[in-house]
Image (cartoon, rainbow, N blue to C red; front, side, top):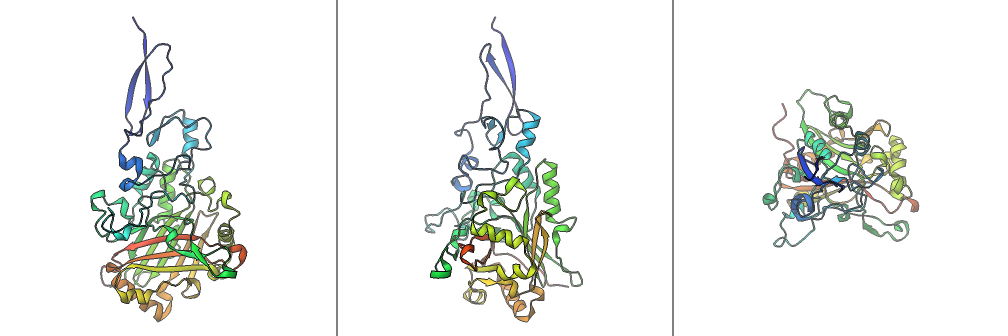
Length: 398
């Protein structure tokens, strides 16, 4: 009678499979083949390419001892508790410059996507690991990214009250020899990746929200608590907080290729001019930060009058409206607050004009640091977001 043994293999979706193997043969974990993986999971939303093999993912396996053959589908075989902890403790994303899952700009008739989401990322700039999915599912926003709440069947429709992350190559920045030739070039992939946006209204007598990262119910505290829950180091978070007359609009970003998953910096890019400038910015005082922080608006679609009012010229925003900064690299976050409400009549009139037309426009809000010397060029986009027909003022303030 042939002797057999039963081997327990843990696979994704918390299912348990038993496999029989003949005596004398060394069983090996049966990984799900690419042909068995659903197309949307294997190739990304809309059939686009996903992160190339060999690049870092949200949970970086590259520095873990042994081979990565234990990976099964989007999960992994538990080789042991210690190795599992090592695999879990880094929060990372694709290597900068990968440009994974970007929807190509095509002729409207040929594309499967609405024109407003062409040139944006079709998924978060992270891997699709099970733990990452669980963390992201617990993070809720009042204005989520379109790909988290749309199906392939609705991608042709115009997105409403949603946001997206436009690819940075659509914006021109100062080139390597700009101080001499004044030539601008397409930016490298933006340093920070968009997670989501919250748009909140305040009552007439409520105080304006600044330094929201320290709020008990704020995004940063929720994010850090969720990461701790799953045994993952929380990454450094960049917050852009527009303090408007009726409330706040706050966008959240993390750095996919940070050192150890927690740092605001990247050691592998330390010699880049833009990386050096970012380090100086984070360590600098308010006066220095205001002198280099640059803002680029771009109305993607909307009435001519809005495009005329908003424009598309880069501006040192810190010199235009009151700007304050909270947090540091040690605190694990930097929150930049633009006090549009305190920016005077001109700023308020422009803000009100945009707000009243926000539901019929799609607009990009882009930030970068200005390269003012040869050694600070080429520039690189720091963060970018696109607002799609949002309701910024749902009701009159009372």
